[in-house]
Length: 64
Image (cartoon, rainbow, N blue to C red):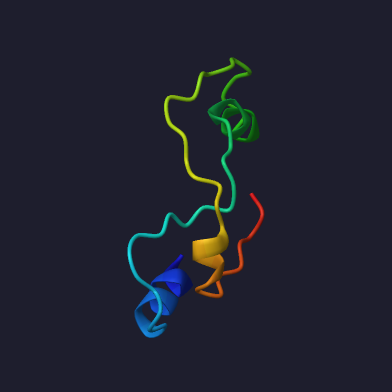
């Protein structure tokens, strides 16, 4: 998301790292959307769902 990079650069209060994700999506859902197969996969990672820091940049997420 290029806008998030621009906001992080231009907003003086922005600092640290930002994980720019709208939400965590299980891989099996992505697989179903791509019509590959219906097997369930166990996620091996977790992404922080805290949006407070990202919202301070004025970033608006596009729903998955």
